[in-house]
Structure formats: structure tokens, C-alpha cells
Amino acid sequence: MSPDYGLRRFPVAVFILLSACGGLSERDGAPPLPRGATDVADAVPRAEAKSRYGNPRSYKVMGKRYYTLDSSDGYVERGIASWYGSKFHGRRTSSGETYDMYAMTAAHKTLPLPTYVQVTNLSNGRHVVLKVNDRGPFHANRIIDLSYVAAAKLGVLKRGTAMVEVRAIGSDGTPSTVSVTKTPAPDTTIGLFVQAGAFVEAGNAKRLRDRLRSLTAYTVWIDQVEQGENALYRVRLGPVEGVVQADRLIANLSGLGISGIRLLLE
Image (tube, rainbow, N blue to C red):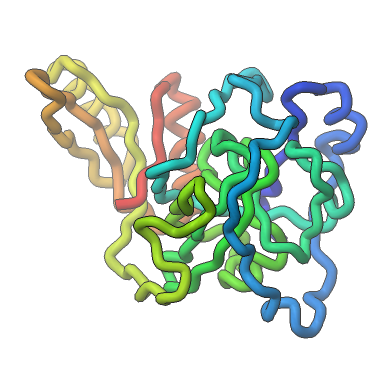
């Protein structure tokens, strides 16, 4: 069972959410995988109008505001995927559709609803095409919540999370820069890192680096990048062994009052 079952949200009607989700104490889970479930076909991209529901300009969940993208064109992101299952099966998604954990769907915080995406598990090269029709996950370090059967096809169920690449398929319903037939090779060079802060003043970055070096066994360094005529100094830690360790490290950094923390796949 995934430890990261994203909270399904209805941004335009929070009172519906509180009733539907049954509170935070309710645990998510999954029944035994039915025979043939992993043979479910990928979602078929097609041009669709934006849902009347789930596409506000912005919405707020647990004190954080999210801004919905106007378009999915060119969207590519790498990060951590989680999945959600029987707790939400049969309930209304943010788009107004019914969540079916045996359908090839997903939840995302900011992509327009609906959007079709190709999700690739970077550790094994498996990929699927999904329809994003829901909002979530609202765990700070997750970028997409997979349906139960999508997680099974990607090999995510056992661990609960996976490092993935999410790539939007063209808004006209046809793939643009992404192949939906070729299976990518596993990317064994991907590393998990934590960015503790980014500064325009080198001195601020050095002070944070020196502070963190005295508090952690992870390698801490400053990565300098150019932004126009200016430089940005990014304080980074890692590589981190896995998602659980990264979550723990981020929690520890947050406990030190450090803000602007990011989880990175590079």
C-alpha cells in the first residue's frame, strides 16, 4: 500500500471534500490485483474540452495555494509518483468523473483537467499513458498520483513510490515530442538530491552550506548557475539513498526553519 495516498480535493467546493474523504484518519489500500488487470490498455489521447470542474485559476489545500496551468503544452517534469486506491474508488474526482482504480488515470496538482500524459518509471523503463482527471497528491514531495492499476503496470505498488518522468501529450490529442509506443530504457544514472535553498548572494549560500555540513553526514555543496546577467547559488545535499530517506531529510531541514526546500531528480 502506498504511504502517499494523495488527498482528493474539490477546489470549488471544499465542504464536499470533507464529506467525501471521510476525514484524514481513513486509510487507503488495495484489494488483490484481479487477473488481467495489468493488461488494461493505456488511455487513448484525444482532444477534449476542459472540465467544468477542477480548473479554477487557483485553489488552496492545507494552507498552500496552487495555480492551475492554462495549457499542458511542453510540460515535462521528473519527480516522485505515488498511488491511490480503494479509499477513493467510486468517488467523485475533481473533474467530476468517478474515480475507478482499475482505469488508466492519474491526479496532478496543476495540469489542466483533462490532460493526457506519458509516465515513465525511471528505474525500470516501464511507461503508460494516463488521463489526468483529478487533483493531488498534496504531499509536498510528490508530483503525480497514479491509479491503482497504473501503479501496478509501472511496478510501483510494492514500494509505494517511484522516480518518474511525466510528459504531457499534445493538447490536440496527438503525441508531439513523446513516443507512446517505444519503451524507454531504465535510467540508472538518476540520483535523488535535496535543494535546501537558492540565493542571489553567495555569502548567504555559504553560510547555509557551512551550517548544514555540521548537521548532516550528506555531502553539501553550492551549485552556481547563471540567470541572465546574474548568478544563482543553490545549496544542495545528496545523493540521498531513497524516497523515505529524502522525506526524512526534508522534514529535518524544515524543523530547522529552512524554507524553499526542493526534492530533485538529476
